[in-house]
Image (cartoon, rainbow, N blue to C red):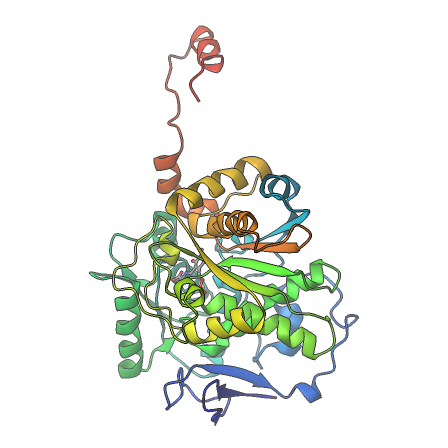
Amino acid sequence: MYHIECIECRRKYQADEVIYTCTCGGLLEVVYDYSNIHLTKKDLSGPLSVWKYRALLPVGREPVTLKEGGTPLYRADRIAESVGLREVYVKHEGMNPTGSFKDRGMTVGVTKALELGMKTVACASTGNTSASLAVYGAKAGVPAVVLLPSGKVALGKLAQALMHGAKVLSIRGNFDDALKLVRDLCDREGFYLLNSVNPYRLEGQKTIAFEIADQLGWEAPDRVVLPVGNAGNITAIYKGFKELKRLGIINSVPKMTGIQAEGASPVAQAIKNNTEAITPEARPETVATAIRIGNPVNAVKALIAIRESGGTAETVSDEEIIKAQQELASLEGIGVEPASASSIAGLRKLVEMGIIEKDERVVCVTTGHLLKDSEHVLAVCPKPIEIDATIEAVRKAVFSDQP
Ligand code: F0G
């Protein structure tokens, strides 16, 4: 059994109420009757998938699923050596069905939409959420409406939203504007809002924590490093680890470490300045368009996750992001989009600053696949070398100094 509860005033709501924030304005979370959940490591054996952890998911019907989760946890020894750590892992969420971690949230969120009898699903998005919603909406046979910041969504993501049949609206404004609009639209039209302010969606995303612990033999790492945009994922993963600890399946919770781009860093600034709340950024800007967000809706939860777990938050420049993306690609064979590379850039910076210690066991979450943003790749990598179709020309080019 479970219900929805406000994280501020602790007001409780029934599980079937369609509500996204408390009447007091606070964010909501799903709370289970943990005393009635008796889970052991043995119950959780078997192949990885989001729905393997069903006992800790708030759904009572057949899921709308495309086999999400079960993403690889790679040991990244060459990255570890390059940044000066002993044990680094990469949890590559780009290996989900639509190429990002959003699928974990959408399989639960869209299933919930059906359970609640909702007729249309909607979201604002920097790209990945819209791609995932379009796909799960298609699978469920429910129309999807997505609001995107015009000109700022990577083409791969836009292509997915279009091909899978969402109604795609390109807003003359940024993500924060789009989110405000879609919340208003959902209130007026009774559409089901599937941004990360929806507590059910975050329940799916917490399975990243379950899988990391599972893949490490039911141990928590010392630290999890991940990009922060609207700040849902860091709170979801933290909740996942806390639940495992509460159920006695793991003994500790990792230090939650959020990385933001310099031009879109309200959460990192609040941590650095030790302020209680964030100061929104009116004009966020970064090459990592997925996290180009100035007013993260889950900021309050994210600050709690970071502070309670003894973690931190840091900013990285666009140059550092691009360098980390190239490094991960060439040293480990892991292709990620710019936002995801910020976790590696942040790892390097925090090791250099002496905040991450040499013997920590660190997991970096890479949230989206390289192919999401191939335009960016073409902008930062050397061009293909065009030559005549002769063996002389091929040999000359192969042995030339040109990259
Ligand atoms: N990485 C990628 C690839 C993302 O697409 C996002 C968010 C994040 C990290 C940050 O996660 O918002 O939970 O802190 N993308 C959203 C979207 C905003 O619309 O696709 P967060």
